[in-house]
Image (cartoon, rainbow, N blue to C red; front, side, top):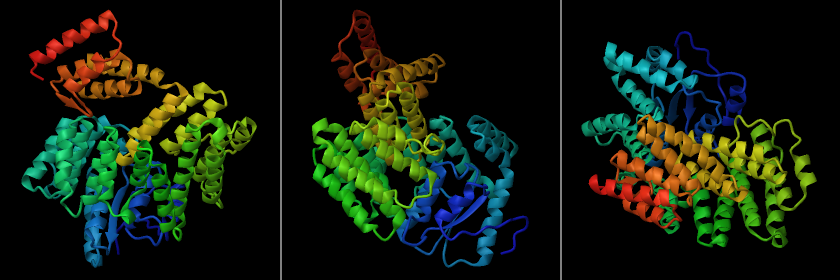
Length: 511
């Protein structure tokens, strides 16, 4: 393939690519779906994006000979710039790469802004380009980019209108279907979101992911039996790591601990010949045993702690990756804290890589917060929980976000830090509300009330915001349910009067 001005590098595995990305950045990645027995190309792109190895501006072209709907659906869920299904010719590949490079040149200032986390500036540049006129061959690419940027900047209604417009012309456009789902979910329109997902489960390209989304929404609504039901619809061998983790926690919430352990054991056994996946599920099982130990009396922890240490030892063996080493050492340190061995915990945190949180997963940050709290450093524990929340908000996989939210909430609750964080989030929400940014304010008030559900002021703020925005349903709350929940709280005279006023206002708005 002859394309001018391209310097090409080739890698045999995702591990090799990750090692190279530590030293340099690439403008474009050509990735196959199947990369041997380990993680797929889709999983590697997700991992590298979430850990910051792939820039927002990096182009993704996927190649695959696998025509199965599940594989094509998984690739499309990543929203690659190009998908080529083998067999293809060098001419068709060259044509697609040239098209992408033309598009990239046209939006280079937008991509530069994205790399610098200047989403609003990126939106402004795209708007200016639309006003000046888009080359006909790039209209589809720009529409897709513009909708994504609007979503990321919080202009969810505008993004939704683009997705609706695309779907009006053709209701089979997968990227627009998923864009609509994400907009409905983010704006709290969960009944509409569930209806849309209910239609998508009938599509072979979207079936498994749609069930995973439905399970995630049910999890947030504490409907754990529904979580189990939806995830049972996915073939066990196709259950993703976040989905498997969600199912184990749903089992645990229903006192089905044996089933939870069995699920993770079976997933480990399935991937015994694929080291990276085997290690992932081994770490997950170790974390599960640590959480069981945490919830047990101090006199009844030894068996769970022993199992956890053994599993961490297996998964952490021969690891050279700093992230994996950090995860290993924090899990072992948490085990030591639960065992009352403070000196050992301190010793385990002596590695140079331990305090580098740039690429640390949110779930590991929660463990780290618990460790530092156990060592008496409450300030650092609070900082790590806040960092976990911020990183989690940037993740793309809703099932992973939901799981981490649960870990962050339960972690903050056990450390007594949730109310303090809720106060800070509520203050930000109040400022957004004053500025008339009701959608953004609503999410902050919702999060504050989730973190501190006995604080009536946070529930009242959410209630007022929903009424002012003329919204009858937001995420797991219908207006009537929210009023009932706030009414059941201990209210002072000021809050009683405010609640009465808001109930009247809701009636006036016919909500």
